[in-house]
Length: 368
Image (cartoon, rainbow, N blue to C red; front, side, top):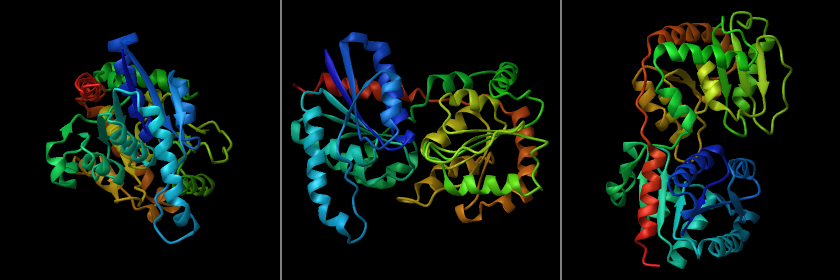
């Protein structure tokens, strides 16, 4: 029996890859492995992990302060508490798999202190603090984008596994043109659309995106929108007020069945988190990315390959407004329709398997 602990929380981008790896390990090893997660009480893991059927342990969220404040003064105590809590969960594990973020940083230190091997997956093109820490602590590093190797000398030996995405998206990516059309028609009906008009999918991550939501509101209320010519699926985020539904506009708080939404969509508007970029590449749809300028500016870097391939466009956050949509959306929709009719399948790495195999190998050879 091997015990695997997976750390990742806050956003779906940190949680869903972990769930994908957990499901692969469960499918291969069944009762020979127990799998548990570490997260916080404040992130989407509180919903997504139990929904996937796994136990979630919660620890204190210790946010690294970026300026002098009361929070900065209390940070050391909170961080020590977070590490101590993580160590109680991890100390009997055979391997820790981390997907970055605040939770993973505490978990990596706890794993090193308790002698548990670390496998860390970096989703972004530019590595974040937590996974840089994992490399320093001797963890095995897996990456999504080749450009992440430039993080430091330690990262030259990183293993490019790709990024785990849901099995349903891998299956969608493999469909030929005829089957993709049938899947689109079925998915459109699931959102109460007849499929005769182009479908725009808009989302800003599990918590939503204020700028994107505001731009859509301005666009729809302007009287100059193309709402009679297109259908819109809009995930506004769990913390945003849900707008009114109309015949051609379907707002939801969160999309649990992303494969269905992607299957229906002709054009996607979203942030450019690593998971989103990999998913958009897999389903081979055109996208307008509105990167959020956070961290290392990794969101713009994540989208670079798709922009270079000519299937995505980046719009700066401050420039993405209702007026921009009025001036540009119809042209982008037309380009997306042309792309949809000519796009073939896109090969997707079996990332969940590759990361799962790395973790099980470390678990078998850790000498415990």
